[in-house]
Amino acid sequence: MLLGIESSCDDSSLALTDLQSTKLLWHSKISQEGAHSPYGGVVPELASRLHALNLPLLAQRARDFLGSFGALKAIAITTCPGLSVALLEGLMLAKTLALGLKIPLISVDHLQAHIFSLFIDKPLVFPLSVLLVSGGHTLIVEVKSPQEMHIVAQSMDDSLGESFDKVSKMLGLGYPGGPVVESLAKACPPQEALQFTLPLKDHKGLAFSFSGLKNAVRLAILQEREKGGLNQSFKARLCAGFQKTATAHLLQNLRRYFANSPIKTLGLVGGVSANFYIRECIHALCEEFGCDLLLAPLEFCSDNAAMVARVGVELFRCKDFSPLHGTDISPHTRLPYVG
Ligand code: KG4
Ligand code: ZN
Image 1 (cartoon, rainbow, N blue to C red):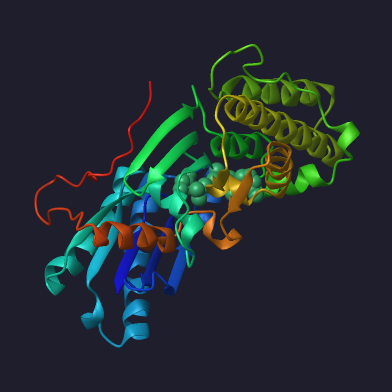
Image 2: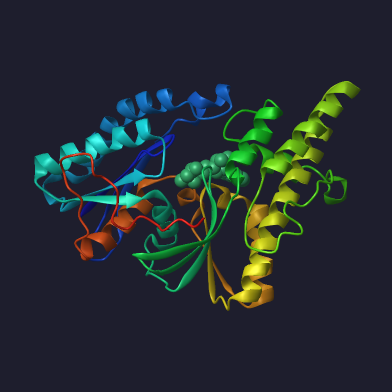
């Protein structure tokens, strides 16, 4: 059995996965969203302290489930990318357990973990192209095997999740912004959504950009404030316009990508992939191009240890272990970044 640990941002999570069957046996998560909400984003110092509080509680729960840690054969831990002070809390727990139990430590790339959220309790599907939309990244990744991945498109500035969060913050709606912006957008009749310019409309290659759209949202809010204030109907029209334009930008890139590469299967992963409007639009595009769409269950779209453990099982099988001492914790499977 393998224990996965996740603490890269604002979710503390542990999961147990069977090494033979790859079945997820148990998982538990303590989210910190409520603690960060008043600040409109994740406060690293607070995140670190809450991981220090919550990870031992989760370890206790895991041990209660197992009876003892004796059956553990390896520990998989997210080591990058993420908030360093948050990652270190998980790494300390992982190293402590690995040293104490004399079992291997497996270093997992967070982006790779999101991709493997598609394979929790499911067999692997390769080759695969993935649109990864999270709080930190917006990428198209080509995956040939668990250790061969190549990023073919990324954001030139902000990520999509961060943009959802900023729109929410500008409207005073707290963190995380994605779910609240999605539900406000849903309340707006489609024809009443505010119009925004499509980012990188005339750009020839594959790339994402959300900073211009974010700024346009900021200016629309300023203008409305000058007129007297932001009512609920304006907020809904603004959220609908932002979500529609940001999604059209994703679709524009996917269309270009599909046109040049014969893609059989597309995976959609990351916190933003919980968004139903985005899921539906990408599903329709995949149907148009005759491509299968793989989605992670909603509970595994945002950060969780089940996806870390799922990668861990594959790395365990090829004995891709990390040293227990020193500061070299970078995964051997670090994704090759473009640019
Ligand atoms: O993957 P994730 O949990 O953490 C990172 O790796 O960053 O993604 C978190 C992001 C946040 O920006 C959050 O606002 C966004 O995912 N998110 C959503 C939705 N649910 C979460 N964005 C749009 N619509 C949603 N329903
Ligand atoms: Zn994530």
